[in-house]
Structures are given as C-alpha cells and as structure tokens.
Length: 69
Image (cartoon, rainbow, N blue to C red; front, side, top):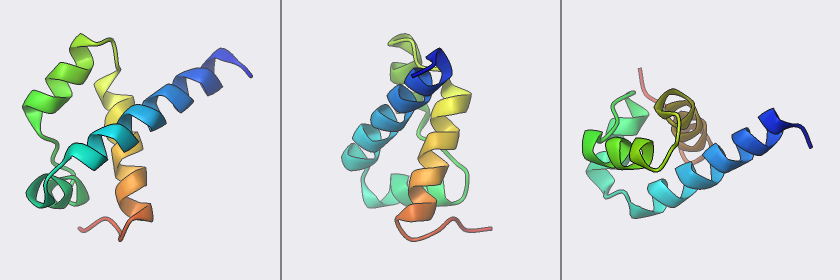
C-alpha cells in the first residue's frame, strides 16, 4: 500500500465516522456541498486535510442516496 492509499483510507474512515455522527440536517448539507464548520475544524485540528475529507464525505453521500445540485 502506498502512502496515498493509506492517506485516502484514513480520510474515508474519518468521513464514515463523521457521517454516523451527523444529524439529518448536516447530512443534507453535505449533499448540497456544505459541511458543518465546527466538525470540519475539529477534524482539521486532528490533522485531517479538510479538502480531502470533504471529497470523502461527498463520495459517501453519493453512495448513501446521492448528491444534490
């Protein structure tokens, strides 16, 4: 496994963890490309790249019912 694969797996796991903690309003926001700032800031403080985390969250939202435009 390359470093990028490890990094992507970490982002995917964190996104799944965050998704499980989101309420319905936060999940709907992600579907429209809006992310809860306090939770994203907390993830950033733990060392996660928020851009990559946002992409992982959007991919998860797509798998769990779809993104909205």
